[in-house]
Structure formats: structure tokens, C-alpha cells
Image (cartoon, rainbow, N blue to C red):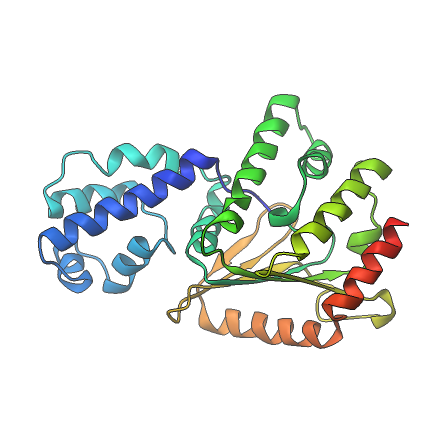
Length: 268
């Protein structure tokens, strides 16, 4: 999957939300009453403050006027908006706010579980990639993994197609270290990884990789991957279809203890 930004982008997003909450509560404004001053929808106001939507410059300027601020939020935007390709920027915000993430990968180890060398090999395979760009992308990908190091990390449930384990990315040694790292991450109580064996034949996951982030308050965000441009969606019907697809794949996936055996066999 594509990338979020660096640690400064992550902290800037959290700081934006903290300042917004502090100023809103200081003026005794609800989401609804503050939204009416911009104007915007109450749901959008709440989503920005929770971190499931990224703020735009226009929204931020209106918000500052409503809260009587003078650039305290605008100064954070450059770091926040530097979260990878424009079409992808909503997804890192959803990941950061998520209580749980369900993720299916068809071709690669998920970005949240990649080593630096594995990620580097992927980016080096991109058309027109040059060293400086590759290293920035690698750093961005590693910083994205910070959500798993939080005091209360989201639960991450991953389903992999078996071919992911057998596709040698970056050479034998890089792949060996990647699979060892995957096993280490599977020891964490918040992370589960399961594999769909090749013997399953045609599955509901052959079309593309996808993910579903759930904030725990009823908000769900979906992400559908593709070669050049992915799609971040809040559409209920689309997310419902992704959930149905997830359930079909989950029924085919091996349990975690069998998955561990499969990974160790590939390592051998």
C-alpha cells in the first residue's frame, strides 16, 4: 500500500486535533454549534477532530476565524498535508484514529509489517525511482508503523495470500529477514496474521488488496489498492461489500498457529 508521511506529520496531526479540541471546549462549543459557524456539517467537524478526516486549508482558515485563532492551526498544515500522494492522504488519518484494522494483501507483506530492506526493494522496482525518493519513501513507510507502538495500539488483523510469502522481494536474505520480522510481530497480542493457502484456488481476494479501519464509534473507512491510484472511501455500501469479501477470505485462511508453521517452512 501507499504511504503516510513522517513522524512530524503524525505529531502535527495530533497537535492540530488537540488545539482544535482545546479551543472549541474553551468556547463551550459543540461540534454542531461550531460547524454552523463555518459552515460545514457536524459530521465533518467531528471527523476532523477525531482524525478520520484530514483538514483542508479552506476548512482551517474558516475554523480559525470561528475560534478566534491567528495561524495556530494553519502552521501545522504543511506537515499534515505531506502524507504521501494526494489521493492517499485520508487513509493514514483513518489508521491513526482506528481501534481496529482489517487488512487483506494479495501480493506483498503489508506496509505496517515491512522491514526497511523489503520496503526499499519494492520502491526500487517502481518506474523512474531514484535514490533520494526511494529513501524518503522507505522512511515514510517505517514511520507509518508507529501506530503499532502506541500505548493502546489498534488491533491489526491481516490475511495474506500464500504467494506473498513465496515472492522473493529483494533477494533471499532480505526475504528471510522479512519473514523472521513477520513472526516477531505475530507475537504481539494486537496483531494476527493468517494465510490463505494456494490450494484454495480462485478466491474473493484475487481482484485487489484492501483494508477496513474501524474507529470504535461506528465510523468505518475503507481503502482499496491498485497499481497507480488507490481509493479511500466512507461509503457504507462499499465498506459493507469489503466486509463481506473479508468474511469470505477469513473462512479460507489458516489459523494463526498453522500460519506460523507455513512461514517457518518457507524460511527453511
